[in-house]
Image: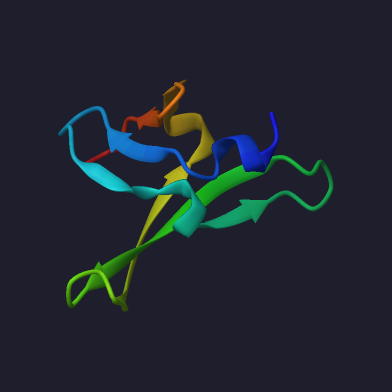
Length: 78
C-alpha cells in the first residue's frame, strides 16, 4: 500500500471513539533499513486548528487494527 492511499484517511481511536487527526497531517517514522513505517506522529492543534501546539501523539504501526476506505482504526494505550 502506498502512502498516497493512506494520506487523507482519518485516524480513529478504537478505545474512545475519538478522532485523532488526518493521516496527511502527520509525520512518519520510517525504518531506514527496511523502508517500513514504524509510527505516526500526530501534532495537536489549538486555536481553532490553526496552530500546532508543542504536544504530539505517537501511534505505532502495530496499534493499527483496521484500514478502511475512509478511516484507520487504532487502539491506543489511553
